[in-house]
Image (tube, rainbow, N blue to C red; front, side):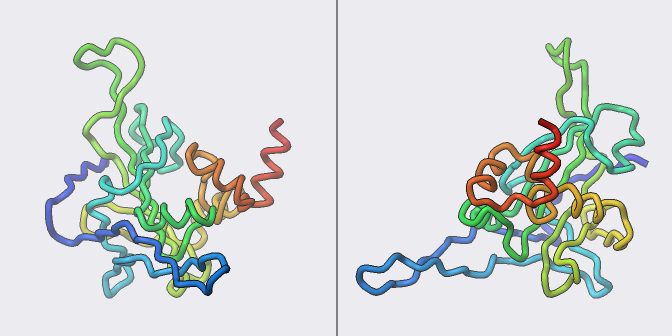
Length: 212
Protein backbone atom coordinates (compact mmCIF):
# COMPACT_ATOMS: atom_id res chain seq x y z
CA UNK A 1 0.00 0.00 0.00
CA UNK A 2 1.32 3.44 -0.91
CA UNK A 3 2.23 5.63 2.02
CA UNK A 4 0.81 9.12 2.14
CA UNK A 5 2.30 11.14 4.96
CA UNK A 6 0.89 14.42 6.21
CA UNK A 7 3.44 16.26 8.29
CA UNK A 8 1.80 17.61 11.47
CA UNK A 9 2.39 21.06 12.84
CA UNK A 10 2.83 19.62 16.34
CA UNK A 11 3.01 16.28 18.08
CA UNK A 12 6.01 14.07 18.46
CA UNK A 13 8.88 16.04 17.04
CA UNK A 14 12.58 15.56 16.57
CA UNK A 15 13.62 19.14 16.12
CA UNK A 16 17.32 18.87 15.36
CA UNK A 17 18.66 22.39 15.05
CA UNK A 18 21.88 23.90 13.87
CA UNK A 19 24.59 23.45 16.48
CA UNK A 20 26.92 26.41 16.74
CA UNK A 21 30.53 25.23 16.72
CA UNK A 22 32.48 26.84 19.56
CA UNK A 23 36.19 27.42 19.82
CA UNK A 24 38.05 27.42 23.11
CA UNK A 25 40.35 30.21 24.21
CA UNK A 26 43.88 29.20 23.15
CA UNK A 27 47.22 30.32 24.55
CA UNK A 28 48.82 33.24 22.76
CA UNK A 29 50.50 32.23 19.53
CA UNK A 30 48.74 28.87 19.22
CA UNK A 31 45.96 27.85 16.83
CA UNK A 32 42.41 27.84 18.22
CA UNK A 33 41.16 24.44 19.36
CA UNK A 34 37.80 23.29 18.05
CA UNK A 35 35.51 22.16 20.85
CA UNK A 36 33.07 19.44 19.83
CA UNK A 37 29.73 20.21 21.42
CA UNK A 38 26.99 17.62 21.53
CA UNK A 39 24.34 17.90 18.81
CA UNK A 40 21.13 19.32 20.28
CA UNK A 41 17.98 17.20 20.49
CA UNK A 42 19.44 13.77 19.67
CA UNK A 43 17.31 10.97 18.16
CA UNK A 44 14.47 9.93 20.47
CA UNK A 45 12.97 6.47 20.81
CA UNK A 46 9.88 4.83 22.23
CA UNK A 47 10.20 2.40 25.13
CA UNK A 48 10.08 -0.54 22.71
CA UNK A 49 12.93 0.85 20.58
CA UNK A 50 11.06 2.56 17.76
CA UNK A 51 12.43 5.85 16.42
CA UNK A 52 10.19 8.88 16.77
CA UNK A 53 9.34 10.49 13.44
CA UNK A 54 11.51 13.55 12.60
CA UNK A 55 8.52 15.71 11.77
CA UNK A 56 10.45 18.82 10.70
CA UNK A 57 12.97 17.08 8.45
CA UNK A 58 11.96 19.24 5.47
CA UNK A 59 13.36 22.24 7.34
CA UNK A 60 16.77 20.50 7.58
CA UNK A 61 19.65 20.67 5.09
CA UNK A 62 18.76 19.24 1.69
CA UNK A 63 21.54 17.06 0.24
CA UNK A 64 20.37 15.59 -3.05
CA UNK A 65 17.62 13.96 -5.10
CA UNK A 66 17.82 10.72 -7.04
CA UNK A 67 15.31 9.55 -9.64
CA UNK A 68 14.26 5.89 -9.68
CA UNK A 69 17.33 4.94 -7.64
CA UNK A 70 15.58 3.60 -4.56
CA UNK A 71 15.82 0.04 -3.26
CA UNK A 72 12.85 0.84 -1.01
CA UNK A 73 10.34 -1.94 -1.87
CA UNK A 74 7.38 0.37 -1.25
CA UNK A 75 8.73 2.88 -3.77
CA UNK A 76 9.60 0.21 -6.34
CA UNK A 77 6.15 -1.34 -6.01
CA UNK A 78 4.46 1.83 -7.22
CA UNK A 79 5.51 1.15 -10.83
CA UNK A 80 5.95 4.89 -11.33
CA UNK A 81 8.84 7.33 -11.36
CA UNK A 82 9.94 8.05 -7.79
CA UNK A 83 12.14 10.87 -6.50
CA UNK A 84 14.37 10.14 -3.50
CA UNK A 85 15.05 13.31 -1.51
CA UNK A 86 17.73 13.25 1.20
CA UNK A 87 17.85 15.58 4.20
CA UNK A 88 20.23 15.73 7.20
CA UNK A 89 19.95 17.45 10.58
CA UNK A 90 21.76 20.81 10.38
CA UNK A 91 24.18 20.20 13.24
CA UNK A 92 25.50 17.04 11.59
CA UNK A 93 25.86 18.88 8.29
CA UNK A 94 27.96 21.59 9.93
CA UNK A 95 30.25 18.95 11.45
CA UNK A 96 30.63 17.25 8.07
CA UNK A 97 31.79 20.51 6.52
CA UNK A 98 34.46 20.72 9.21
CA UNK A 99 35.65 17.10 9.33
CA UNK A 100 34.45 15.33 6.19
CA UNK A 101 32.57 12.70 8.18
CA UNK A 102 29.44 12.38 10.30
CA UNK A 103 29.27 12.95 14.07
CA UNK A 104 27.37 10.83 16.54
CA UNK A 105 23.60 11.54 16.51
CA UNK A 106 23.52 12.22 12.76
CA UNK A 107 20.04 11.69 11.26
CA UNK A 108 19.64 11.24 7.49
CA UNK A 109 16.12 11.11 6.06
CA UNK A 110 15.32 9.48 2.71
CA UNK A 111 11.93 10.65 1.45
CA UNK A 112 10.49 8.78 -1.55
CA UNK A 113 8.03 11.00 -3.40
CA UNK A 114 5.84 10.09 -6.37
CA UNK A 115 6.92 11.54 -9.71
CA UNK A 116 4.51 13.16 -12.14
CA UNK A 117 4.85 13.61 -15.91
CA UNK A 118 1.92 15.76 -17.02
CA UNK A 119 0.50 18.72 -15.16
CA UNK A 120 0.04 22.45 -15.51
CA UNK A 121 2.27 23.56 -18.42
CA UNK A 122 4.67 20.58 -18.24
CA UNK A 123 4.67 18.39 -21.35
CA UNK A 124 8.02 16.61 -20.99
CA UNK A 125 10.13 15.12 -18.21
CA UNK A 126 9.06 14.56 -14.61
CA UNK A 127 8.46 16.61 -11.49
CA UNK A 128 7.69 15.75 -7.89
CA UNK A 129 4.11 15.24 -6.81
CA UNK A 130 2.57 15.69 -3.39
CA UNK A 131 2.35 12.01 -2.43
CA UNK A 132 5.07 10.58 -0.18
CA UNK A 133 5.33 6.83 -0.76
CA UNK A 134 8.01 6.03 1.80
CA UNK A 135 10.29 7.44 4.47
CA UNK A 136 13.44 5.77 5.79
CA UNK A 137 15.86 7.17 8.35
CA UNK A 138 19.55 6.37 8.80
CA UNK A 139 20.68 7.15 12.35
CA UNK A 140 24.16 7.23 13.87
CA UNK A 141 23.86 6.42 17.58
CA UNK A 142 27.11 4.89 18.75
CA UNK A 143 25.96 4.07 22.28
CA UNK A 144 22.77 2.38 21.11
CA UNK A 145 23.79 0.33 18.06
CA UNK A 146 26.72 -2.09 17.87
CA UNK A 147 27.49 -1.02 14.31
CA UNK A 148 27.06 2.69 15.21
CA UNK A 149 24.40 3.12 12.48
CA UNK A 150 20.85 1.79 12.10
CA UNK A 151 18.00 2.06 9.60
CA UNK A 152 14.36 2.71 10.42
CA UNK A 153 11.27 2.43 8.21
CA UNK A 154 8.17 4.59 8.72
CA UNK A 155 4.59 3.71 7.87
CA UNK A 156 3.20 6.82 9.56
CA UNK A 157 4.30 10.13 11.08
CA UNK A 158 4.56 8.76 14.63
CA UNK A 159 7.36 6.19 14.91
CA UNK A 160 9.43 3.86 12.74
CA UNK A 161 10.55 0.24 13.05
CA UNK A 162 14.18 -0.85 13.14
CA UNK A 163 15.46 -2.78 10.14
CA UNK A 164 16.92 -6.15 11.24
CA UNK A 165 20.70 -6.44 11.08
CA UNK A 166 20.51 -8.96 8.23
CA UNK A 167 18.63 -6.50 6.00
CA UNK A 168 20.38 -5.83 2.70
CA UNK A 169 20.73 -2.11 3.39
CA UNK A 170 23.40 -2.68 6.05
CA UNK A 171 25.76 -4.73 3.90
CA UNK A 172 25.14 -2.54 0.84
CA UNK A 173 26.08 0.62 2.72
CA UNK A 174 29.08 -1.06 4.37
CA UNK A 175 30.42 -2.35 1.05
CA UNK A 176 29.72 0.58 -1.26
CA UNK A 177 29.20 3.84 0.68
CA UNK A 178 31.76 6.59 0.20
CA UNK A 179 31.92 7.91 3.77
CA UNK A 180 31.08 6.22 7.07
CA UNK A 181 28.50 3.85 5.51
CA UNK A 182 26.64 6.74 3.84
CA UNK A 183 26.29 7.34 0.10
CA UNK A 184 28.13 10.64 -0.01
CA UNK A 185 29.05 9.82 -3.62
CA UNK A 186 25.47 10.85 -4.48
CA UNK A 187 25.64 14.13 -2.52
CA UNK A 188 27.35 16.54 -4.94
CA UNK A 189 28.10 19.27 -2.40
CA UNK A 190 29.67 16.86 0.13
CA UNK A 191 31.75 14.57 -2.09
CA UNK A 192 34.42 17.24 -2.80
CA UNK A 193 34.69 17.93 0.93
CA UNK A 194 35.21 14.25 1.73
CA UNK A 195 37.84 14.05 -0.99
CA UNK A 196 39.62 17.12 0.38
CA UNK A 197 39.50 15.78 3.95
CA UNK A 198 40.60 12.31 2.75
CA UNK A 199 37.68 10.54 4.43
CA UNK A 200 36.54 8.49 1.43
CA UNK A 201 36.35 4.76 2.18
CA UNK A 202 38.82 2.32 0.65
CA UNK A 203 35.99 0.32 -0.91
CA UNK A 204 34.59 3.40 -2.63
CA UNK A 205 38.00 4.48 -3.91
CA UNK A 206 38.53 1.03 -5.41
CA UNK A 207 35.13 1.12 -7.13
CA UNK A 208 35.81 4.63 -8.39
CA UNK A 209 39.18 3.59 -9.83
CA UNK A 210 37.68 0.51 -11.48
CA UNK A 211 34.98 2.62 -13.14
CA UNK A 212 37.49 4.90 -14.88
